[in-house]
Length: 281
Image (cartoon, rainbow, N blue to C red; front, side, top):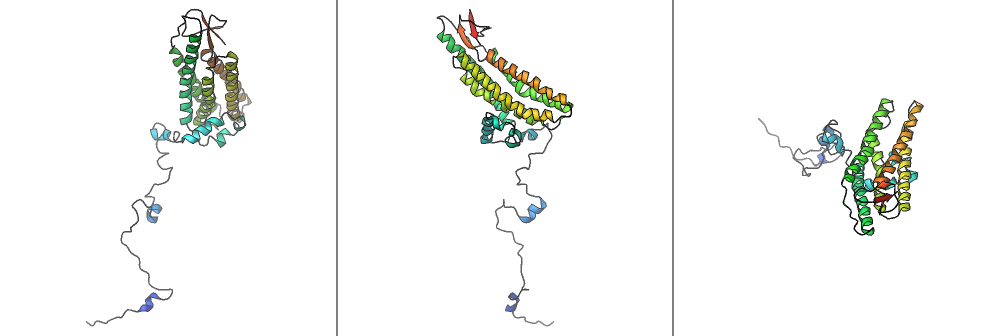
């Protein structure tokens, strides 16, 4: 067998067709870096949407997406409800996508502010009233606040959504309905705090302002959905909702925003006080 010695030819590195070598050794890239091959094969799942949409409605993962919202977004959605000019485009501009985090905490906070503000107003008026007048905290007001707020803020939009689905109006999701109703109640939180002011006229003005702002917000977002129905009679549902909205405002005024006095002229008995305690509306 003959051996032929071949000398290295430097010309192999010259010209457009020079040889190229590829290494198959492991790379020094960080273990978390996404290689091209892994990305093409779908081995890496670094996209934000991964893991959010899996599972049915009975799983926690299904509802997690509706609570994945930052505080700044929730605050912006809250104070935007106080601007009437933003109400008509609220769903498309500010509530996209809808969330349940903000509405849940708005309704829960409203329950406690209603109870605390009414209790504080009653205790202050008892202190300023006739000597010997005592005030006992009435915790039934807390249970009333829970029932009224959650029934209006959660149960009512669900019932409305079911009714619209039955009538063939499917342009509104149940999450959007609950989100709109929840954010609409934000105005009652500062109003309930300000209604501690011992002045009946001021309280009526605050309640009227809150009723107008939240009512306009609801009408601006609900009526276009009702108007999209083929049956024109569906639009009359807005009248029923307006009556319920006024009923909620009067309930807040009578139960939580009444000015408590002792021996004065009033129309409603005062919970938590004995004797001749009355309240002026």
